[in-house]
Image 1 (cartoon, rainbow, N blue to C red):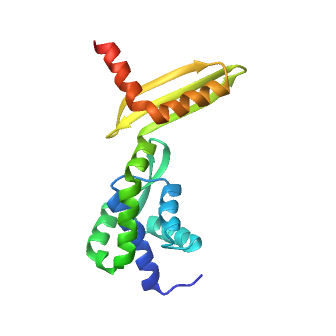
Image 2 (image 1 turned 90 degrees about the vertical axis):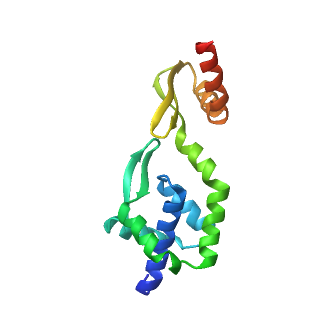
Image 3 (image 1 turned 90 degrees about the horizontal axis):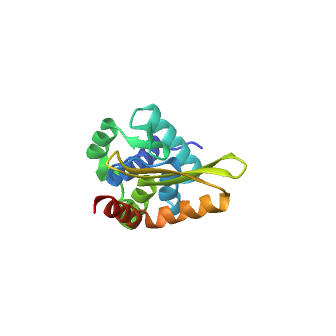
Length: 174
């Protein structure tokens, strides 16, 4: 698909704007969802923009708590600062609204980790973490006997990690 370079540049700016305003690394899936759910860029153009932004050093892949993520670089931040006015008011409003509605959910996705893996028959290791500002607040590894238990523990951790952490700390400190 061939685009006028100005149109493609504007689409790249929207991605940079999203990453800059979000203020934290995002997985490619999270970026894709934000852009495609709001019909800001079509899928193939989005893929091209991501590739070109990475090649030009505007974004970089980084290992984050849940794996491979994308973060805006200093060069990307400078570029958004200079050219932000090229983003249409409608597009920036859509992105700002998306961030307002989803930022805490996305932050929680990246800070609360619950995963498990099968070790042997009837042995599963559940790994639970809470990370805040690059610091691991708590990490628990549990050995359970079934995938059902492992899934249940992961789901409860995702939904109630704050209260579980608070209860545990209260029990240990008091």
